[in-house]
Length: 504
Image (cartoon, rainbow, N blue to C red; front, side):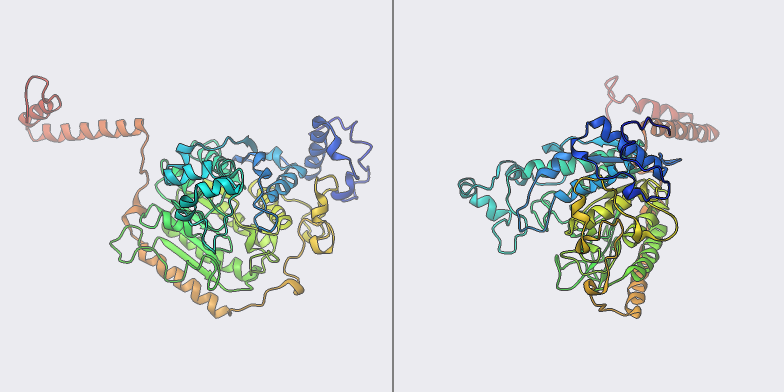
C-alpha cells in the first residue's frame, strides 16, 4: 500500500532498524487535522503489514460517547479505559483490518426483551441529586440501590451509559446472525452481573443476555465463555433452565464477589430438568499463572465445544483476571489472556467478543488491543519472541498512562506477574487436574442429549416450505401405493374445512 508521505516525512526516520515506537517522533498529534492523523495511522499500518484477514470478516462496534461517563473518582470502574483501548487500536492501525461501526444506543424495547419494564423506567429517570433520590426512595429500596453492599452508584447519565453499551453489543450480535461478520467485537459490553430487575457488580443492564437472546433466533446452540476473574452469575441465572445455552465460567471462587459458581453449581438438579448440567463452572484459586490457566482452559473449553457443538460462541474477555489488577487475584500476562481468544477463534465459529471487568485501565487497554489484533490475525511487533520489548508508538494519545516503571515503561506487553506484584499460589497441580476431571465428568452427563442433535432450530421460510412440499409428495406417493384414494380425498377436503359449510 503506497501513500503520499509528504506530511509525515518530517516525523519519520529513514532508518529501517529504528523501532516502530520511535519511527514517529513526538508529534503534536492532538492538533493534527483528521486527514493528517489518518496518514500517520496508515504509515504505522504499512510498517506492521496490517491488512484485512483472508477468508473471514471482523467488525468493531463502538460509540465513543460511552467514554464520557463517570462512576465517581473512588470507584474502580473507569469507562475511560475504553478511550485508552480505542487509541491503541487506532494507533496500531488495526481499524484497517476491520469493518468499523459507530453503534446507536439501544432502545427501551430492546432492553425490555430481558429486563423488567419498571426497572428500566427507573433507570431512565433516576439522577444523582438528593431531591430526585428522595422522591424515588421507594424504587431505590426496591432495586437494592440503598443496600450497604451496593456497588452500583447512581450517576447522571446512567440510561445513556447502559443504552450505549447495549447498543454496541446488540449490533455486534446482529452482524454475526446476519452473516455480515464472522467475528464481532464490542469492548464496551460484557456486563455479566446484572439481573432482570437488579443492578450488580458495576452492571446495570445485562447486554450479554440480550445478545444471546438475539443469537438464539438464528442459532440452535450458543456457548457462553467467561474469563473474567468474577463468576458470570447474571448470564448463568438468565439461561439456568434452558439447554440451548451452555455457560462456561472461569473465575476466582470463595470469599470473593459474587460468591457463586461453585464446583457443584451445574444448573437445575435432576437430569429431567431443562438446563441440568448446562452450567459449567471452573472455580480457581489465587495466584494461577499463564501455563496452568492455559492448560486448564484448553482442556475444558475444547471438550465443551466438542460435546455441546455450539453454532456460535460469546466470549466475555474480562481483563480483571490479569496480574496486577486492582481487584483480581490472578497472575496472568496479556498474551496468556489473549491465548484464550486465539484458542476459541481457531474453532472457526461465529464469535462475539465482549469486554467486562478490568480495573487497571492501562492493562485493560493493552489486553483488548492485543485481542483485537488476535481477532484480525495481526501480530503487533516482531516474531522473535521478544514481546516485552515492543513499545507503544509515541504519538498515541494518553501515552503517559503507559509510561513509568509502575505503568509498564511504555511497553505494549510488560510483565504483569513480576515478583513484587505476584499473588501467592494457593493451589497444587493435583487441584487443577481434579478440577479438569470434574468438568469432563459433568460434560459426560449431557452427551447424547436430544438438543445436541438439532442442526437447525429456526429454519428459513424457503427451507421450511421446501421441506413441507417434499413431505407432502412422500405422503401422497405412499397413499397412492396403498390405493387409498378415499384418504386423499378426505385430506383435500380438510384443507378447506368450513369453506363449504363443512365443520368438524
